Image (cartoon, rainbow, N blue to C red; front, top):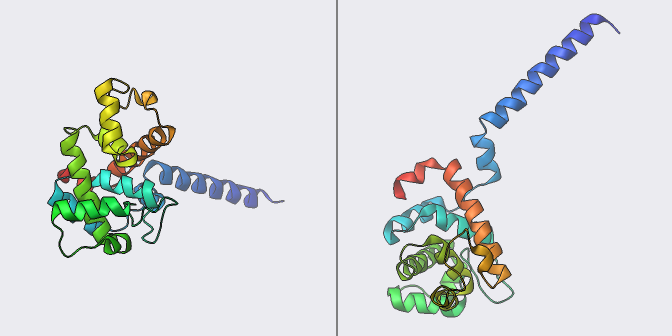
Amino acid sequence: MSWGWLARKRVLLIVLAGFIALLFLKSDWLGRMMYPISYMDSIEAESVQQKVDPYLIAAIIRVESNFKPDKVSRRGAGGVMQLMPDTAGWIIEMAKFNKMTRDSVMASPEESIKAGSWYVHSLDSQFKGNSVAVVAAYNAGPGKVGQWIKSGVWDGTIEKLNQVPYGETRHYVQRVNYYYKKYKSLYPEWSSYV
């Protein structure tokens, strides 16, 4: 082996290591590639319309369906926001979304986001801006979460999440919170909507 070849190999290794370090230090594009948000325009429009946090809507969608519009849960929830048909019907009636149907909420990402955002706003009003309780209620239902808080089983905070009786709901809140933080750091252009 020649010393020239070894020196070139070292230089190449140093350049490659520097490039990899740069990727990890300034990796917004890499983060956005790993944590993409589909339907950004619909999420943004509905967050403004319903006065809800777009990062929260995106995080709920990520956990519920991973932005897959045709996903249907084993319990029958559908659409990108995974609404139960009865909940979708209630939302349509209460919000007076006259041109919307249960089927369209399940099939159309835009209508699912519209209905789901309205529902998040409704939960936000019910739980007086407590986003942790809102996320728990989106999963377990507002009646259950209201009972837990009223009876002192859970205080509605992320710090006492271990008090939530449903393991699925505890895990759900943790996952939504994780994606919420990721999206907030990777998509600062939405910070004016929060």
